[in-house]
Structures are given as C-alpha cells and as structure tokens.
Length: 114
Length: 116
Image (cartoon, rainbow over all chains, first blue to last red):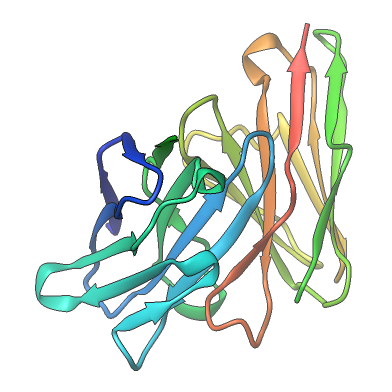
C-alpha cells in the first residue's frame, strides 16, 4: 500500500529563514506527488505538483519541491519564510494516477516567528 | 481555475438528527468526487468515492448506512450524516479531479459539523 510520511509534525522558523518541510513516500509505481497548504478552517490549496518531467517543481508563493526517486522524497522548500506562510502543509500522493484519490501525510504545522 | 464549493460551511445539529452536505463543481463536470474527513489537528482520511450515476465506494471502516452519498449529477455530490452523534463532529471536505488536471484534486472549502 502506498503511504506518505512527513517528518516533523511541527516546524518553527524565523521570518526570513529557510523553510524545509520533509516528505517521503512509498510507491510501487511512479507516483503523482503534491503539496497542499491549509489555513485554519479552510480547504486545501495546491502549492505545487509533480507528475512527470523536470524533477524540480516550482509552485506558488515562492515554494518549490524536488522529486528524488532514489530517496523517495519530495521535500518542500522556500528560501525565505514570511509570516503569512504559517499554516498546515500536507504532502500527498496519487496512487491511481490522474483520476484517483489522494493519500495524505499527517501534515506539518509551520510556525513563523517574527 | 476549477472551483469546488461546499454548503453549508458550518452546521450545528442535535444528536440523532441528519445533516446533508453538498459538494458542487462550479465550472467543470466531475464524474468522480471524493469525501474526506479531518479530525482536529490530523490529516485528511478518505471516506468514500462518489461516482455519478452509481453507488459510492466506501473505505474500510466507514459505515455506508450512516454516511449516505448521492452523486445525482455531474456537478453535485451530497453527503448525508444520518442519526448524527457527537463523535461525528468533524471537518468534512470534498474534492474532485478534472480530466486535464494531471492528477490534481480541487478541494472544497470544507464543512465544519458539530453535533451537540
């Protein structure tokens, strides 16, 4: 069965510092990988996705992620954190390709200190 | 981009009553929609897959007689929580893929259900 592991349920960084949120997945076939952000009491907003092609994916709000097949990882980074980045971040994998449901990691809460 | 709406955004009901939550794809057709449940400070767990014109597929451990799903049209799926109890209080989120989204799911804003 496919699964997603997010290391660290809570990450705290200072404003302007590097953001690194870790995600590892298990998949027997090439997966589709996603990062979503959730603000309190709201639905999920797509940050970025990897399906095929270039392994470094750029998303919205300055975030990017790199698909590393050898490490089965899809870590999310942002060079400089902003206060507005404080939210819950979910890594997800699509086990069935383009029309399937998503399997989510447990989420990482990002706090940004002034 | 594609938009998915949910109604209501929040609802409070008494124990034993039923509550219907609507999920609509506003600018695209969705033959499939997914219903997720999210407990406080936890991840989203897939409850069921809603299929237009046919029965929903429920995940293991989800009571199909308690969580009734109807996907009557290509733009609307409903989730009815029957005989709700306090333990059903949760955040319910629906999503839908589009044919051209490359695996991306478009999520509704969620419905906060509180059963008293």
